[in-house]
Length: 158
View 1: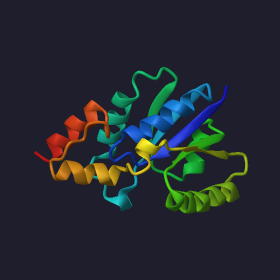
View 2: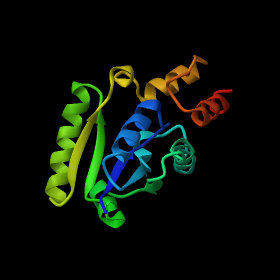
View 3: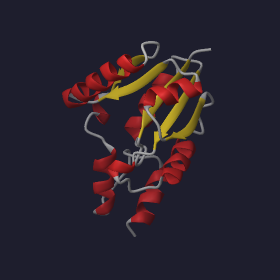
């Protein structure tokens, strides 16, 4: 069985994240969406909230499950039996950062392969931080996040 890990902070999960997860789910038997604790990023949503939102957003994908983690990515991949890490790429700035992370992860565990899925044009600009900014300013989030996330953001910024 081919199991892949799609990691991220998902603060919150966006339509761009869902695009990557959905496309990756067609390539392997099982996808684990790994929600990183990421305390240094001071997330808007707690780890539990981010996991719950990701679970709600991916519930229609039968081969996808969501799990939290608070360790090195390669350690989590080993724990869940994933030998593939899937990352989305939006722009050249993503590539530079992801290139460094992939090289580091390869040094830590050469058995884990990283593959990249390019964002389609409609999501190339989309990020969790942009979504949080739109929500903070009470802007229209249609097409940027799933309904469960829109509701959660509106509640946070009520």
